[in-house]
Length: 241
Image (cartoon, rainbow, N blue to C red):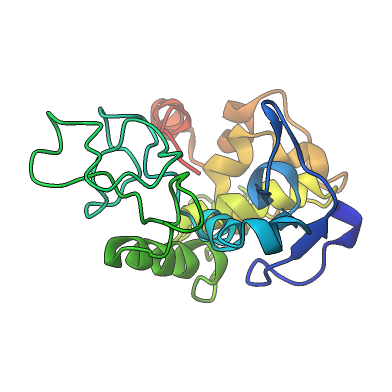
């Protein structure tokens, strides 16, 4: 499927297939993870279009950032959407009035009509307002973010290499570096910032770059000597992608 991939992250690739193998036997649909696998889109079976048509909105919901309403069971953040009630497990029947998390869900019932649970097609027919907002948020931040601006270089010390601070949207910049690395292209230091670039050894992907022993020596070329203690602090800064 990687060879079939066309378009940008804003392009939904939809594959119709004869069969989808799953750990429990077979599935009506599956969502392909762009970030993790280098592929992006949804696949549904031909048969599901007649027998299980809500498989498609379910998978597109995943593609736009939604997870199952029953994710995590009764405890925890569940699906990270406030207006979907807690659900212990996916409803495999259209049980009106089902309350599988009575302690956490005292005033409502399981979302058996939601596209993101496992109810039958005769029952699934809605996304909540919170789910719609989450899909719009994921779309604007991950799939169609505003134009990315690389960091301008800072010359901190005469005779040293330029230092690039974290870009304003450093998650997006780090992702650009990761994607270039995965595709066999040099990761650009001004895309993800010098700290992320050095700490991930991205200089190795570019034969034109000076090669280093480790991330500290890479950053020493860019920061003044007195900043070594700060360099080590920078390198332990967590970066979430």
